[in-house]
Structure formats: structure tokens, C-alpha cells
Image (cartoon, rainbow, N blue to C red; front, top):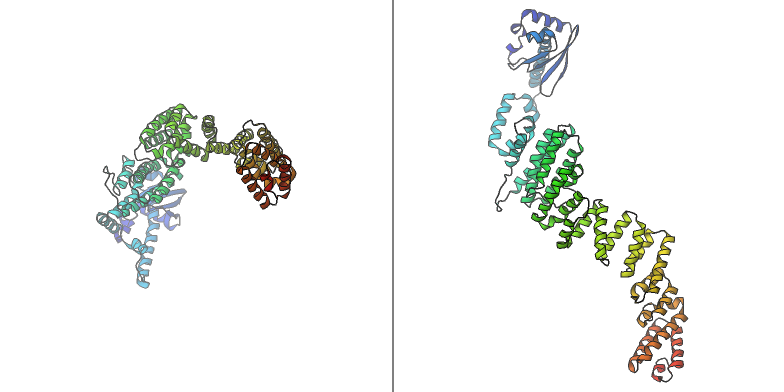
Length: 547
């Protein structure tokens, strides 16, 4: 700053200078603040308080404004002169202090703050220009940092050009990207993410959307095209998807809201956009805010994507199609018929994401045609538990146990039902086993053992005599009712021995005797021995087994 630039008395009208100097010497001038962009804000008391603003004081670029009438008429006033007198004193004092500091205390080392403080702005600008020409990455980051300050005719294209300068779009399958390029791109995308969130927080939705459209497109393109840094890119993609939620929840102007919907609808049709995650998906955020026309449009798009996208994406696409339809329609049923594995995947997606009604609708229709499918039964039971549908839990739990004999269904019923209700259910199951015409003994006997209902087991075994079933459970029954068990063995042996002669019968008795001895079932041995002596004395070989 030259000394001539301080000469207020030589530059301005004498009358104004005298009036301004008087205000200053009378202490009517008060320096208020300096804004981030270098504007000095000064209050001058002259009957009333006038606020003056002076940018670049004592330079050729100096600009000043005042609230008074004189300034509005003449573009200069005594208040501005008074403010300049105050600034001149302050700036001269600052320069003198700076010179004194430079003489008295010299810094021991060089640092960035010293350079920025002491270097001329023109020199700094010159350095930046030169360095940006020589260093592409520095030039790019300069643009990333300050792009929001420059308003262009197409701001989306502005951000797109920055990102394309790092990783350009390609059409060949063989093109590869350097790891350093990808890491730098992720760094830039993180910077843009922060800028987007800052703009949303300040309700600068236009600026936020411009950055988002360009950045999200590049991110999803790179994720699909290059299989590197998958975990880091997926995490970044999830955060960008969350930004969609911020947009949707914000009170956007109608025009911006329509533009957002158009852009997002366009995104899901791009070949590089992947439907691999249900939650971190454009439709997860967009679907609740669609009108009828938009819903129908996206349904058409999803049916086309089902035919064109990889099979690994079918479950997520179909799940969103059904959510848009709000039902399990014939198009979805036809797709599942050709792709049965997707049925389970879609049910799982609905269950995990709280769409229980659609999952129930799918499973109940499938259960009608596949009533013995354990996977369908288990998923239905879980949903009935989630929705607290006790009647369905009982009906399906009973059916599942009777058909499979798997005691986990009894455990489930015991856990989910009150004790009194559980007792009623087990009574119905027990009665059903007694009344079966062609029973499968496994489920019935597992039931009695699980319930420790040995009396019921003896009744069932009497109605359905089986030597193998008796052997399987006799160690439990012997402790409960040895005499009744022994009688059942006699009844069962009587049926066998009537129709079986020779060594086979003798071998069976020898095996049974060893089994009873091993389990200390001496009462049964004595009862069977007496039975043989009374009814099969004419076959001494059988009696000999027990001597």
C-alpha cells in the first residue's frame, strides 16, 4: 500500500474532508467488524447511526457505501470520509506494529500461516495459476473446493466435468482404472457428499441437487464398471442413497421435487444402476412419495428390468414391483413359477423390511399347494408370531407337528400359548393320534415322549401294536408301568408267534431277552416267560430261551 493512497486530504473535497475529520476527532466513528470477504463495517453517529461499508480501503479497487441521503445522491459523504480517517489510523498502526515485529522478533521457521499473512494477493494468485497448470490433481481439487462459488449456465455439467476429468466414461470392456485414480475419485466424492449435506442443512436445495445428480451418477457407474475397493464404494453408495432420503424428507419447491423424481426415475433405468440391496435403493426412498401416475410408470419400468437385468437382481426388482402393486398379482406369480428360488428371497426381503402382509399373502397362497413344505410352514409360523395371530399359530403348529413329528413345533406352541390353551391343543393332538385309521407312529410316540405322557403312550401302543415301537420306548414305560408294558409285549409276541415258526421266532426272543437284561427289565422277562409256558408249551425251543 503506497503512502499516497492514505492521503484522504488530497483525494476528496475539502469541505467533506473537514466534516468527516470532525466526526472522527469527536469520537463518533466506531469500527464494527470485517466480513469474510474483507468488507469493513463501520458505524458513524451523526444525529442518527449510519452504517458504512468499505471494501479494499485505500486501493484502486476501493468501494464504499453509506445509508445516508447524501451518499445516495453524490456517491460519497462525510460519513465515509470519517470512516476512512478511522481506518487510516488503524491500518498505519497495524503496519508500524508489523514492521516492529519483523525487526524485533523474527520467526524461527517458515509456515503456511506466515506466507498467507505476508504474501501479496497478486503473488498468491499467480502461484495458484502456475501450479494448477503443472499439477492436474491440484487443479482438480481447486475446482472441487471452489466450484460452488462459480454459477454457470449448467451447474450439473460443471460438476460432471470435474468428475470426468478424474475417471472418464468409457465404452470398451477392456479399459482399466488405476487404484490411485479410484482412491482420488472417492476422496472427491466424499468432499462433494459433505457439500451436499451442508447445502441441504442450509436449505440450498438447488445447489445440493446439482452436486448430487453428477456425483451419484459417477459413483454408481464406477461401482458397476470397476470391481475394486468394493467395500469402500458400497459404504459411500449407502451414504449417497441416504441423501435421497434427506431430499425426500425436505420441503422442496414443487419444481425441484418434480426434477428429483425425474432424475431418480431415470437413474433406475440406467444399465449401471444395480438392484442388489433392498434398503439402499432409490425406490426405498422414492416409493412412499409417488403419485398414481408415477407408480404405474415405474411398474412398467420394473417389468422391463426383470427381463433385462442380471438374475441376481430379480428378487429386489420383483419385491419393489409387488410393493407398487400392493398385492401378489399374476405377473409376479408367473415369474415365480419360472424362477422358484426368487420366491423365498422376496419373502425374506419383505419379512426383514417390515412388509409382513405381502409376505403372508405369498406364503399362504403357496401353502395351499404345498402344505408339507417345511420352509413355507416355518416362515408362516414366524410371521403369525410377529403379527400375534394365535389362531393361525395353533392351526398351523398342530398340522406341522402331526405331519412331521418334529418337536420344535410343540416347543413353539408351548412358548407362544398360555398354559391352559397349550393343554387344550395337546389334548386335541393326542385325541387325533388315537383316532387315526392308518397312523404313522413316529409323530405320535414323539409327542407322548415330549409330553412325558406315558399313560397316553401305553394306550396308543395297545391300539397300534409294534414290537419295534415297544423296544424304542420300553425303558421309559418300564419305570412308569412295568406290568402294563409286559402285557403289551405278550400281546405283541402272541401276534408274531402265531404266524412265525422255527429259528426266526427263537432268535427274536433271544434278542429281546438280551435287551431286557441290559435294561434291568426283570419283571418283563418273568411275565413273558409265564406267557410262553401257558400258551406255547408245545414249542419248547421258545421256553428254553428263558431257562
